[in-house]
Length: 181
Image (cartoon, rainbow, N blue to C red; front, top):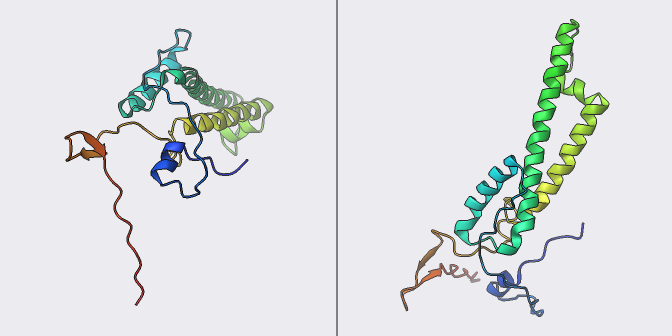
C-alpha cells in the first residue's frame, strides 16, 4: 500500500495549499445521475437505486460514474448472494447431521468452514468484501472516506450569503490562537 490517499485539489485549495506545491489540474465533470445499465441483475438494480437515492441529493454523482457504480452494485449483490449461499449450506449441514444423528460440536458454520467448499465460499466472500470496500471508498461511502471525497451542495450544510442572497457554504470558524504570558 502506498500510504494516505491524496486530497482532491479543491480540498487542498480550500485548506490554503499548505505545501505550496502546484495543484494538479483535475477533470471537472458536470453533476448528473448516470443511467442505470439495462443488463444489471435484479438485486443489483435495487442496490443501484438505493445508492443513487443517497448520493444524488448532494450532487456527488457524475454521468461518467456509471461503470464504477454498476460494478459496486453488482459486487454488493454478489456478496449478499454469497452470504445467502453460506447460510443455505449450514442449514443443509445441520439437516444432514440431524438425519444421521450426528452432533456438530463447533456448530454448523465452523463445521462448514472445516470443509473445502466452506473455505472456498468464505474466501470468495472475503475477496468480494475487500473489493467492495475499495469501491465504496471511491464514492465516499465509508466513514473514513467521507471527509476525502468532495461533495456538491449538501442540504443543511449552508447558510444564506448576506451580500447577494445566494446560498453559500458555512465558513470555517476562526482558529483560536494560543497566547503565552
